[in-house]
Image (cartoon, rainbow, N blue to C red):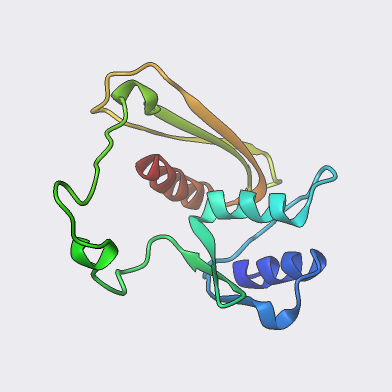
Length: 157
């Protein structure tokens, strides 16, 4: 099933009207997805968004789902953001390197075999931390695709 069709189904199940949902910005296929506990459609969509790298934005009362790895659609200068004033217009906040995970481990079901558990991992070699992050996703994914998505999620972190 396409990611767009699944997200649309979950939104409809949550009671959103069809004309308030826009999933045209989503791509990708969901080869298997299990909802194994009572959870809201929003929780299911959040899990899918984390795994596939997408987000929801509201514009004029319509919830639009978009992939995060899109090309820029506009360039905005600092003067376009706020009224001019004395001093710095933007503030940059840096996080601690130790807050970043060094390895990110994802557990998924293998889509290419008997749905056995598969553990994929990506690792930062440039950070000095011992923090390990791991997540489990109730979906079937080919291991090479899970590795690619895990790598993207680690870079987003």
